[in-house]
Image (cartoon, rainbow, N blue to C red; front, side, top):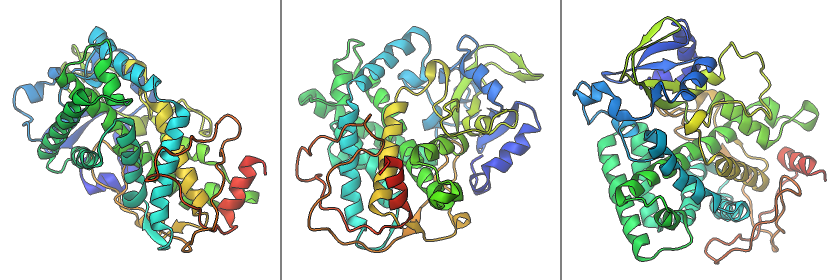
Length: 437
C-alpha cells in the first residue's frame, strides 16, 4: 500500500483485497504487516466496538518487540501519543473533551471570515497569471493561513508545522519530520504560555482537563494533522472533481450539481484520509472466518468501506452516512468546521475564477504515494488572466440566509482587495442559479 501503483489506482487494489473477505492482509510499509478492513459493515463493527478493538498503539506487538523498527516511515502516524486519537475509555473522554470544548468556541462566521480573507489573498496572487498549481498555491496554503489564526501560530512556526506534517503523511524521512513537528509545537506552547490569547492553543491550555505540556503537544498534533494535510486534500480533491466530472462541470441544462454535493461525492469516493483509524484487538478475535490476533494492527479502509459493493444505495448527494470522518467514539470532532473551510475555499475560487479548467487531462494528474492519504501531487489549472475592478464587491452568502456575511477584516494584511472582473461563463451562471438570482 506504499508504492506508486497503489496511489495510482487504489480502487483496483480494494477490489483485489475484497476477494479475501471483509478483511485482508496488507503491508503498510516494507516489513510492516497489518489487516485492512474493506467492508462497510466490518468497518462499523470495528469502529463501534472499543471493548474489543483498542486505539492504544502500545498494544502493537511488532513495534514492541522490534519487528517494526522505530525509523519505519509509518511509525510517526501509528505510534502512541497521549492524545484523544490514541487513548481509550476515561482517558480518551478527558482528552477529547478538551478538544471538543475548544472547537465549540470557534464561531462559524468568524471562521468563514478567516477562510474568505485567506482565499482572497491567495487568489489575488495567481489571478493575473492565468495559470496556477491549485494544490501548492491554494489548497495547501489556505489551511495554513486559517490555522495560523485559529491556533495563534506565527507564520514561521506554521510553515515548519506543515513541513513536519507533510513528511509524516508521505513517510519520507518521517522520523526527522516528527522531530521538526515536536520541536515546533514546543515553541508554540512556550509562546502561548507566555502570551495566551483568544485561540485554540490557549483554550486547550486553560481547559479543566489540565493538559500537561506533553499532552498539549500531542493534542495539537492530532488537531493540526487533521486540519492541514487532510484538509488540503479535501479541497484539492473537490476542485479536481468539479473541474473534471461532467455531472458538476457541465451546463445547467445538463444537471450540474453544487459544491456541497461535490464534497459529499469526494467524502464517499475519495476521502482525504483513505486508510487509517488503526485499532488493535485486545484479544484474539475470529471475524467472518479470519483470525484477528491480539496486538496486530487493524487498519480501517474508509475509502474501501465507502465504496463497498454491498451498499445498496449509490445516492451520495446529501448522504452523510459515509465513513470519511470515521464513526463511533473516535469520530472526527471537527467535521463541521472542516467541511465549512473546504466549501468556502472551493466556492470562493470558482466564484473568482469561473472559467478555470485543468491544464492537463485528468488521467495525467499524479497522486502522492502513501498508505494513509488520498493526495494529489499537484493540480495545474489555467484560466483567463484577470485584472482588478475599480470597486470591491459586497460580501455575499453562497448558501443563502443561513450564513451571515463575514465580519470585517481585523487588519489590512489579510483584507479582501477589489475583486477581478469576472467572465460570465458557466460557473458564474451556475452560482447565480444556486443563489436563486
